[in-house]
Length: 197
Image (cartoon, rainbow, N blue to C red; front, side, top):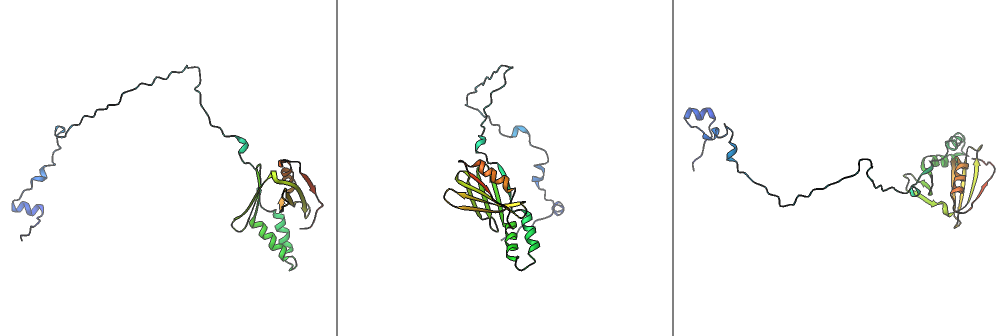
């Protein structure tokens, strides 16, 4: 079996071997050497004539959504910061320590949202506990001011007898009046005197 040797161009010139493929691409090929193709279309050509008077604006159709189903937020927030601050100051006593821990938990893990459609209470470390109810099921709304009346509790009684206790809510009077106004039937609004923390 014979083996072929590959020579460098200088060695090939010394031996006298010329390679003709080097001269193939030295000048570009002529355009006549390429094949030509003709493309024919069998589709009929249609003209579209559009005319409109110059003074009239074009009619546009708009798909507008109804604004009655859009949810708007009235209040979205957590427990009042005064509740946390007051309980932290009193938390240095061992007697008040359980209430301080409850206030810290409320401050970091509790969120209230009042919209025009529903009331939402979100709780838990990652917000996995969520309760929603509509204003249509509200039977009774009570408020209990806390400390000096800067924050308070809202107790909402539903038509099935369930009591929803919202603790340390800021702007609690305005929120309670909003719940009463959004309820389907006339709802009783009760406010008791200021109580402790």
